[in-house]
Image (tube, rainbow, N blue to C red; front, side):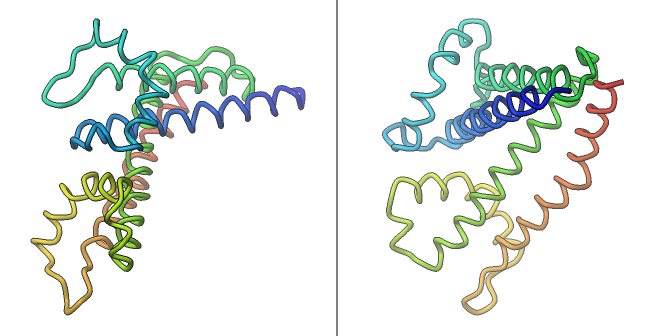
Length: 193
């Protein structure tokens, strides 16, 4: 492998990975109903509408999940992984079944990555109440509240300390490392073989 291919694939991989986080964030914010006029929503819409709107004609949403966004995310992830296997790993075109499993694992991994980040942001924002009264705070609250409220009912605060974010972080970390990592590894192994 030539060094310029490695640099090229790294840049492409980083750009596509960052864009995949934007698309995933749009999906999550749309699902929980973050206000359309939120600046964070507008950034995601501006960066993704060019592809999502045409895909809605062939992939309608069902029960609050916009499958056009999911399909767009899967296409970007597949392109990213094909470039990675083809150019950087010198493995040729990946096995389709392995690629599909790898993309599903990557989807779950990115979803959980974002969830970990927003839980940490919410925990930090709880120390500074004035931070919660802004558009990002609203989005963070709406993204975390469905899970965190259920955990808070099971484990009430001890004095002034709420342990529910810690338990959610632990659960997400375990799911990510015990289940999702194995799905990604299986997909990678099948795709490259």
